[in-house]
Amino acid sequence: MKATALRRSAPVFAALGDPTRLRLVGVLCASGAMSIAQLTAGTAITRQAVTRHLDVLAGAGLVRDVKQGRERLWQFEPSRLDEARRSLEAIARQWDHALQRLR
Amino acid sequence: MKATALRRSAPVFAALGDPTRLRLVGVLCASGAMSIAQLTAGTAITRQAVTRHLDVLAGAGLVRDVKQGRERLWQFEPSRLDEARRSLEAIARQWDHALQRLR
DNA sequence: ATAATATGCAACCAACGCATTGCACATTGC
DNA sequence: GCAATGTGCAATGCGTTGGTTGCATATTAT
Image (cartoon, rainbow over all chains, first blue to last red; front, side, top):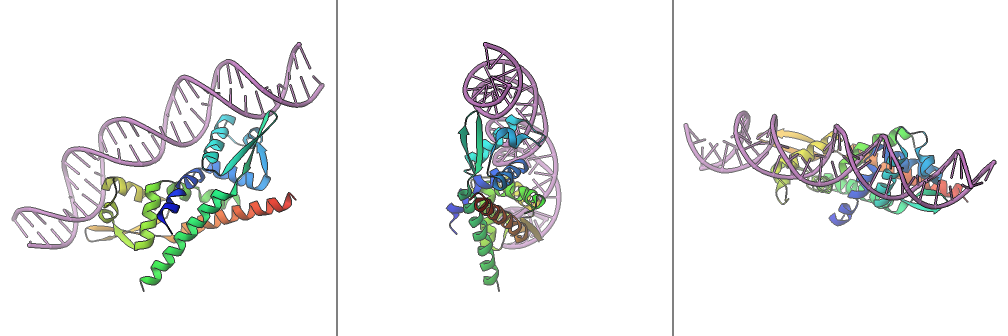
């Protein structure tokens, strides 16, 4: 794989590198669209902290928000995650090729 | 997928979230085993910084070191990365199922 | 033995990340 | 209108991260 494509996935991995954010992604994946208040309920952190995490995820292109009345609904956005997944697959493939070469 | 399995991948993603470390993983994947000095050559940062990054990667289980004389060779360790890759696949699958359900 | 190479360890520093609190603003329900 | 709900914005605290420099130690080469 090209090194540039790999480098482009770094921000996505960084965004997924936090347990709280990883959980948010999982919840949004399973439940469609949720408000900040809904996403905060059941966690030990404040609403503002959740908002910041969502902003980080949005910065990496993993989620996007839709304003609806006084609420702000967040939903999962799969394209970047797919890209990151392909990056990991490419690395694994490259490793397999390297192993074959070393024999 | 189980939430616990997802949570277990957070440290791996965090380790991959730095461009320097992502590059190190790529290089080690392609080249087999390399010393710290070799991995430092061609970068703008110091050998000590590279050592720190390698320690972080080792902490996430992505690489391991083998001492050989005065050198310390580092090599890629695929198991954790495979696990993380499967986590991303599970998320993508879950999203597809959610989409189907919403129709 | 001596010089060169490869690394380890520790102190230090600037910047960033994660979470908080406090207050203001907008929207909805009664 | 008024209260409740949902959110935004700003300042702050504090631990972590990513990088450095300086010096010590271990191994290899001549």
